[in-house]
Length: 328
Image (tube, rainbow, N blue to C red; front, top):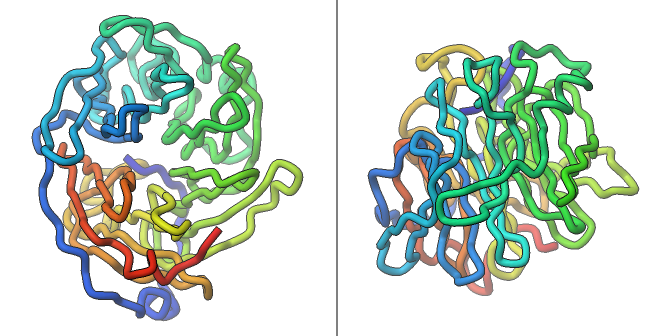
């Protein structure tokens, strides 16, 4: 479920940026059968929590056994094959869920925004992103008036939210106030990570999501101009820290448009997990991933959620002492 708008060339540089290849991490399927899986987080109890957009629910996953239990239901389901509940985060042990593509512009009745879990089968709308987007349309081209939000990350008592279609990041307070935090050209912002005051963001890049446009950038509240940290992987969808503050990115893979136009996913089994290096290159740690959407780290193990409903477990991702890449 990635979103894009323009074309670009595929230079020889892309192959150089991914030239560093470490021994590939072994993959094991921890979970299968999730419905419309997308976003994920590590909960207060150390378990993995995943959104199932097609089912309108949250699922708890034991990271060691792979056992799954329904954590909550009652969220707006996806209406067009993507969207619905797409990400989750906890604040003070309360679950908040990002919902997108559920409003009138796709035939629904639920505002895109952040919903708070009130009980195992009840949610309340906290922040109406649809309303803000309609009142404040972006400067870049768009065809979905309410936007296509992708990821959320706790930040300064609220949340940062990326909109990959409207090309901006929102800052949303727990009282529901929505403001623009950062605005971009057509770069397609996706996954987020925060370390201190610094925000790290993945860019999928515009259609056709060429590798040189798949970037990890960083910016801060007092200096919102993004600084490129690394680039070179096609259709980046997430960025996360591992052990020792090593930085990793998740690429959904090569995009041919065979599943539709702008906003359609990458080709199957072309995704990869990469590590960010100090020189701005990326080291491939796992490849052949089937349309990954998000990832989490527990210790030195990566857990990767895929659009097809799997969670993959990759042990010993970093080499001692916790990776070769960039530290923050």
